[in-house]
Structure formats: C-alpha cells, structure tokens
Length: 334
Image 1 (cartoon, rainbow, N blue to C red):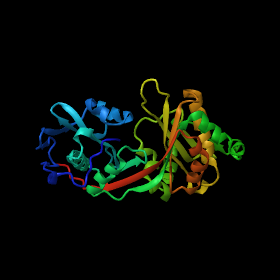
Image 2 (cartoon, one colour):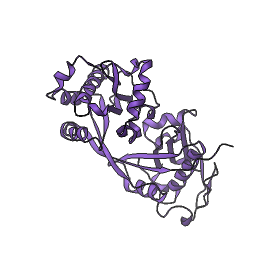
Image 3 (tube, rainbow, N blue to C red):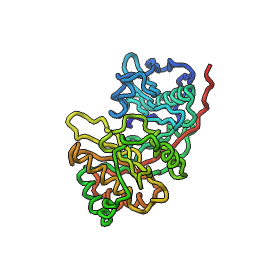
Image 4 (tube, one colour):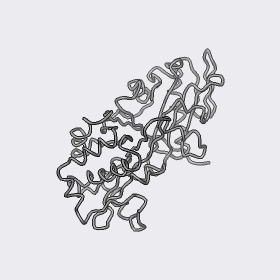
C-alpha cells in the first residue's frame, strides 16, 4: 500500500511525543495529530478488499487511524489471531504527512494492541509492486522486524487464459480420468475429514508456511471455486479461494489464497488437475474474463518453476512476494 512512513529517523527523535500504551495519542507538532480507532472513513487509506474490517467493528482486526483535525491521514490495519499469526494488512500515511514518524507510531500502537489481545507473532506480506516498498521495509526494520524474505510469486491473469494454460498440460487428461481422485467443492467437507486435515497441516512444509492452512483464512470461502482433493475418498489436499472486492465496473476477481497437497503426492501433477477444476468452475460462474490471482511459495520448487514457465508469460501481472515477521509480547488479561 502506498504512503508508508520512512521509519529509521521517525519517532521521538523527530520532535514527536508518543506513548504506545495510550489509545489516544497526541503528537506535538505544527498541527495536532491524534490516534483513534479507525472506522469506515479511513477506507481510502487501505486496499478495497480490507475495507470490510473498518465497516464491521466486530471484525477481528486492529485498526489504528491518525487524524489531523477531523481528517483521516494515516492507517495501520492488522488482522488479529491467536491460533495463527496475526497479519499487518496495510500501513499508509498521506503523502503530505510522511516523514514525521506517524507511520512508525501507528505501527507501534498496532503491535501493542495485538499483544493486548494475546497475539504472539505478527507477519506482513507485500510484493515487488508495492508502492513505496523500500520505505515500508525501512519502517518495519526500524521497529525490529525480521529481515524481508522472498517467499514466492504472485500471478494475476484472466481466468480463461489460465484455464487454457492448464488444459494444454500434456498429462492433464490422464489425471482427470483417474478414477481414484475426486475434486468436490470445499463446502462438501465431511465430519471425518478433521483428522486428515490436521495431519496435512502438521506436515513440515505446511507447518513452515502458516498461510497454507485453511484456518489461516477465516473470511468467507468462495464455494464455487474452492476445491477439496480426495484420493480414494480420503482428503489429501485443497485449493481455497475468496472473492475479492473490486471497483464498480471491474471484472470479478477470485483470489486463490491457499493450495496444498499431501507431501507424498508432490510431483504427480494432481495439483494442476485441482486448479483445472477451480478455473473451469470460475469461468463458468464468473466468465472467462474474470481475474484469477494466486501465489506460489518459493519453497515448492516444482510448482514454482511451473508458474514461471506456464502462467507468468500469460499473466496480466506477475510479481515477487516478500514476507517479514516480528514476535511480540502478549500481555496477560487483567
């Protein structure tokens, strides 16, 4: 998100007074600045898909807004989790108010509130196309976040083009005709799938990347394009998607937020078959011009190379994904 604070020289040294444990923070400067719990008036300061967090007070989010007078000028927005890492969704300061320590102060307040709610780990994911990416990374580094890692590719393309690329894969027909595999919708999960799901989430590759676990995505799952992968009626993988909020007049957009397959089935091509079913259902339900967006972890070499070779050349955009994180100290409830 554009409008990130500079970070390294921000804070009290820049002439601002800040106390992270106060809900309302006055910063002494030419114009009084205050921090408040942000609401929907701050929506222009984050991505459209995150605006729902501001419109619904009951959402499990932390929203720290900065105001100058009565005008919103900054926003730090995070999702809050205890069983899975919290996530810094966006950090933004209006251009005229940057380089004053506001972004760093909002970030510290956001971290403090997450800790109060019991969070222990907070992560941030951004891409090579993030506006003012270097400033964003400097702000996190100055707040003692871990160094940024390249964790994968993010690809966005027309669903029809993606479906054509998958269909052209030579081994696909054989996989689609395999009798012992099935790809029912995610909503058709069974009661006895819990044990299989726990086993898969406990595999080292899935445990190392919390974003792969279905529990990491508490927002509504898009039922049409989310797929369960079954082998001999046993759950062995999934493709989970969410429908994104888009501006009026824009094509529908589906974000494939998580895809995982039993480690024993890597390099079999079954995940390509799962994506074929997902893209086919998306094209039928939302049209071939609807957008399909997905990420591939760098740690999954085979899928990573496949994305680079087959999908990236057809994409409307293909960018690198970066991740950083910070351990925060939770506070005991009073």
